[in-house]
Structure formats: structure tokens, C-alpha cells
Amino acid sequence: MTTAWSESYFGQLRELAGDRPLMLTGTRVVLRDTAGRLLLIRRRDNGRWAMPAGAMEYGESVTDCAIREVREETGLEALTVTPFGMHTGPDYIRRNAYGDVYQHFVVLFRAEVWHGELVEETDETVGAGFFPTDTLPQPLMGSVAETLADLARFEVTGQLIVK
Image 1 (tube, rainbow, N blue to C red):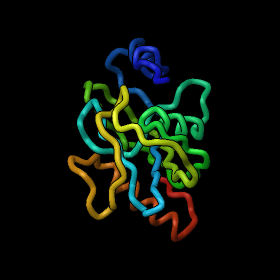
Image 2 (image 1 turned 90 degrees about the horizontal axis):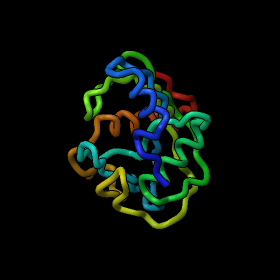
Image 3 (image 1 turned 45 degrees about the horizontal axis):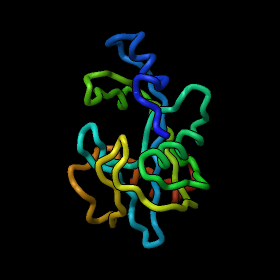
Image 4 (image 1 turned 90 degrees about the vertical axis):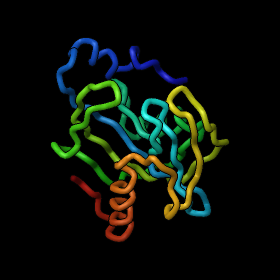
């Protein structure tokens, strides 16, 4: 079940903070099928294709957040996830589709084991599918290319990528 934005931790915090910039902790998940195709969702708020991602809820671990976001946005159940990077700092200050400013602290995960049937439309998405990485759909969120590059570096070095 998806939590309504107004009931989420960050929705409640935004209500209290007004238009002040907030720090947001979240996750982004790279999930590939057996053919190596990348799972992308088309976001309802801006129409762009992205990886499953979202904000951590109060009392939740980053691992639980990653697993929940995959489930909420795709219907798939990620059983095993591995962190491979963190995006932090001033380069990750963003204004969202609603005009709110956040400094993101995003933990990047790779989902190794998963199961289930892909759901193409949810409360947060208007599309979902697996795509070859050389023919990704457009418009694409800018975070996709950077996340894939960081994953490739992690898979070669085995070292956590921290930015």
C-alpha cells in the first residue's frame, strides 16, 4: 500500500517547514532482468522515465526503503539488494515538480534477486518496463546515466561510490 504524500514523513515535514529547503534521505534502485535490460518507471509527477526511487519513511532503514519503493512503483519484490553508491552534497540540491527544494542524500542499490509480475501503472507511475540500456525511453531523468555509470564503476572496483 502506498502512503499518501500528505501522510508521509516528508509530506508532514514539508507542511511544517513551508518553503524552506529540506534535506531528504532516499534510495534509488537498479534492477535488471535476466537479459540485462534495465527496469524503468515513468513518473506520474513529471512524465520522465526513472529508476524506482523515493524518500525514506521515519523509522525505516535505507534497505527497507529501497525494497518498498520497488514494490510500490512496480509491484515487484526485491529480495536481495546491495548498496553501491551514495549521492550527497550541494550537487544534489534539486527543486521538484511542485517547486519544493531538497538537498538529497540518496543511497544507490542494485537488486540482485527479485520476483513478481510487473505492474505498469500505480499511484506514482504511468508506465513501467524493461529496456536495453542502449535504447532507453525518453524523456529520461538525468539521474539514470549517472547511476548506471556509478554502478559500472562499482562492478569493476568493488568500492562504494560516494559523491
